[in-house]
Length: 262
Image 1 (cartoon, rainbow, N blue to C red):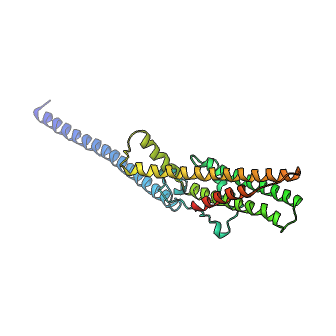
Image 2 (image 1 turned 135 degrees about the horizontal axis):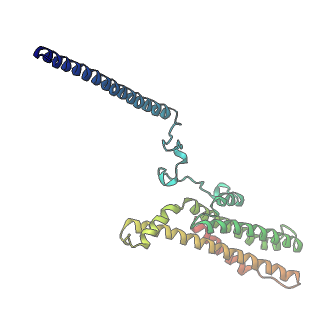
């Protein structure tokens, strides 16, 4: 091979290599461009799909499983004041109204026992009252002095029991069991000093529980006096004599105490 032929061969080789390199680079470039375009379209599709799903969420909804805010767990719901029906004997509230108000609290922590006591007490009082009136009707004529002698303390006792139950019911409805539980944990753990606001609020809750204990005890005493009144009527059935003055006075005192809590 001559020098000229060698030079030509080298030049042609260089040209061929350049062409091959250019072609290879073009293919790789095209492949990379295709990958970029495909990736961009995928991202755009995902963004568009996400936006569409957000548009379809209910008003006030949560992106987590599409749960409306009202159905979110209590621990994540905003803290709000609890509404309740304030009961007032002077507005004509009846025993049935009070019992209906307490039934939803039957199993509530801390106050459930008081709600149950209201329902139980009013039921017992109504039963006792009917028994007393039936016995009085057997012994006396209505609107006579003797009949009124028994009827007056019965009426006073029933009003006192209803007043006590209304006051318990109002306290039960207003009692924030979750907050009381939180404060109790702090106090038990020693994380609330007696001078702290948390401790003082915890004491206020405790005072409310003590008040309900006192009201419940007042109801028990009034029911006991009504039972004593029944015993006096039984004496009359047996031909004996009856003195209801002490019972009537005790009922009056207990009923006055019921008004004190109003």
